[in-house]
Length: 394
Ligand SMILES: *Cc1c(COP(=O)(O)O)cnc(C)c1O
Image (cartoon, rainbow, N blue to C red; front, side, top):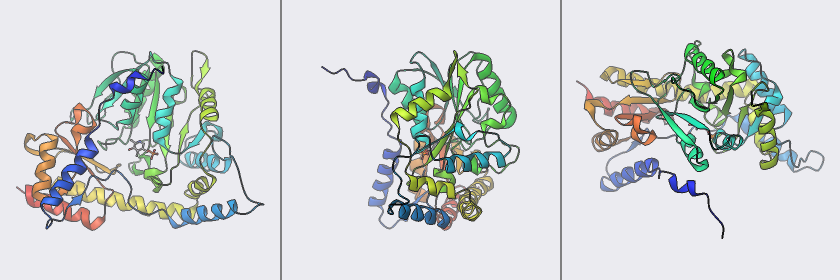
């Protein structure tokens, strides 16, 4: 009889988003007169840029004509998109070859699939709190996990430990804490990884939200990163592709372990198990880098940035402690009066009809914290902050 992967039994049930939805729905049902505002959205809400939509429509028409029809494309992505991504990096002073870029249907897939390259015996270091995908994909494979505690003391930007590990996940700007590593902090991670032979899996899904010129938007801005790091990027949060699906992963040629080039292994993995992203979507993604779309895409990001600023300014006025709000669409606040994450969730829902996300759902170190997001409507975000101010104004 078939033997199943027993590690699936070790996965923790993630109740976070279902429980948030359940409590919000129960409240709305009990109080039909109350207007509930969600500052818990982890998805973009602004539409795709018109220039992106036009590029996709044009590509769709090409697929309907015999002389421009295309079948299977290159598994690692069309050259036109990989070259556009390369040029975007170059514009930020980062030299990456087009064939070090692998286009995919999103960062989540690549983050999960990349573990195919690693043996089960590796020890994996994962920041706490963090995006749950890193934990679950490694639990599925049966790897040993070590958590790296984030706290107010380290600004939720923990540095390297004093013991060696094999695989490290870094997410900067971080989901959920909004915290972003500076150059010196990332240099410490790169030096650590090169020192002990670890591989850094760097999730840059929110890099476009970085406005501070002193904060790196790519791990490859850091000297030494090409021998220890892989970077995961996505058009999801940067250009509104959460429903359209497109991302890319950069695997530098210099990254080898035990004489094996990870670039070559990932190429082999992708050409075997993946058949590329649709031509239509890749045309839409490439359009993001045109002058016309760039401005339109920036407008959407600026919209979220302004929401984040409004939330942060509201919390400043109340004297709340938080990270994020700048360089990130997330605001991670310390629950007032020592309240637990879920206690604060209920308090805010009942007294302000505002929904956020309890930090405890992102890992044990998230207890006592709370995530608000900038992915909502402007007027609703303002209204939510006015209600919170009315509740907590000294
Ligand atoms: C949203 C998000 C992603 C992006 O995933 P896609 O599959 O590209 O939509 C990756 N990492 C983090 C931390 C995220 O929050």
